[in-house]
Amino acid sequence: MNLDYGQILQKIDRAVKPFSDTGKVSSSIPELSFADPSKFGIHLVDTQKTDFAIGDSNEKFSIQSISKVLSLTYAFQFLGESIWSRVGVEPSGNAFNSLVQLEYEKGKPRNPLINAGALVIADILVSRLKNPKKDFLDFVRSLANCSTIDFNEKVAQSEKATGYRNAALANLLKSFGNIENDINEVLDFYFYQCSIEMTCKELAHSFYFFANEGKAMHQNQQILTESQVKRLNALMQTCGFYDESGEFSYKVGLPGKSGIGGGIIAIHPQKYCVATWSPGLNEKGNSVKGMKALELLTTETRMSIF
Image 1 (spheres, rainbow, N blue to C red):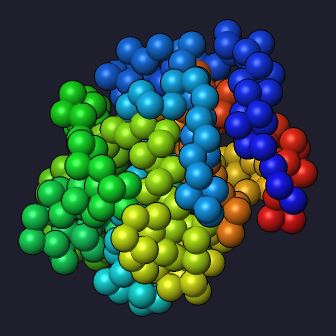
Image 2 (image 1 turned 60 degrees about the horizontal axis):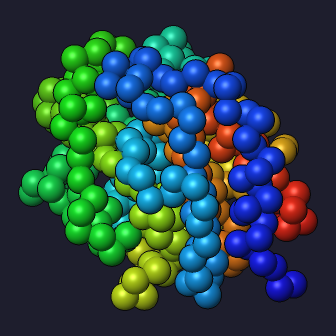
């Protein structure tokens, strides 16, 4: 089926305009509250490496929890399947920053895409990288083939100043022996990881390997094996959207990951990778326009993974 993705994106852009006044910009991290709720962009790259974009797709934004997939990818390169001895693969069914669930499950986070799980992954990278923040940033830059991707220092400091619950999670993990390094070092890495700024284009390019059997968009580098990509796509399908993962799977039918900066990444294996950005969030912490846009995308293309 030959699809005109450019025309489809234009149709989606018109269709989501009525949602401009819905959703609320995140204030849980004070620096994020300055984002303009009217912004909206989409960038899609297909597996022929053709780019399609519309709206504010070249404006940088804080990717927040989307970064958890990239840190997991990096750690997966080091540990492979042994990584699952420290973090599970099941949907949480609770808030992404739940202390109660972590206590109940004796310090093994339900999955790596909730905050406790991402902190364990951060600990793994702190153990294995000589310069964790620089090395991780270089990894992300190489995936997107873009040397200008960087941390947002103001966002990182804002996260650090208000990250009491993440500090509580890290301390609880440490009490169960599931954090090996100094807590402050792990938290520092985690806050900076989440503060990375990217455009929709850069985000779509960096996640391209999830749609391309593990091969990166640039230099054709094998980032993960086909089997590993299948597993992480499955995790995104079941755990990528906080308490709304089932809803996203039901309405959109693609693996993906959202962040409270308003970004969403979604993958149609062997077809395309698409990134959306709009800061207005629903009560579950997902972009209102982004969720609607991706639902319309799979409706218009008549393609999902199901």
